Length: 152
Length: 126
Image (cartoon, rainbow over all chains, first blue to last red):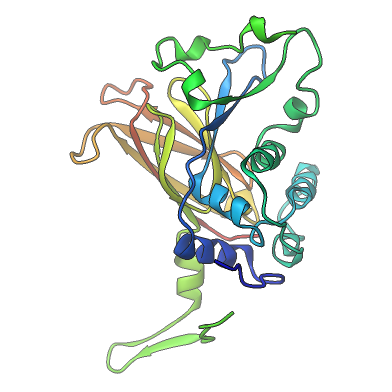
């Protein structure tokens, strides 16, 4: 199905179109990351409808748009977004393959302090894996960490 | 966009009228049915990911952004069966204009992994 020309269309309306016209895509990929030494590993699960948008193309804004909004929100005097138009008026990105979509999602939803330095230090702070590579039971979930064996 | 109707007011023949502001502002902007036990998103709209953070907590990141944290209203509940109501429940908190934080509890008010977390959010989009 061809994506309509969505430049200038509110992102909410683009997501509504995708929900109505695209089948969700359940990704097998999971992103495991640690953003605090005091906390267990976190596991990011891609949303099926978002993944469908990423694979379709012409719907999602470039990831830098979210970074700009996050910068605004980090200002001490932030009250309210005034550059929301970036979400709606920036040319949507082209279709991505699944791996590129996961990379985009990491840059969007994982803390920058993790993905910008994921391979620095004695052990990786982030790993992309398949769902079946995770423990199948949630026993001791609060103690899950990225294995030291992954340190190359 | 094809099929667009532009209207500020909807008027019923006898029951009165309502402005479309009610529809635009009053609709849920995103929702999800998330299974933390299986770590799977069963159904959703308007989110980009769910992050399983601990045994009972998780965060939702939205595909769009809200205009301010004070203009976000997440609501949530939980169950451990898809067909029978249970005493599981789920709390919500706003973390930023793109992220909400949630914690599941069992009937004894202890934090617990919940199989069916039902979350929706109202508010003003950026």
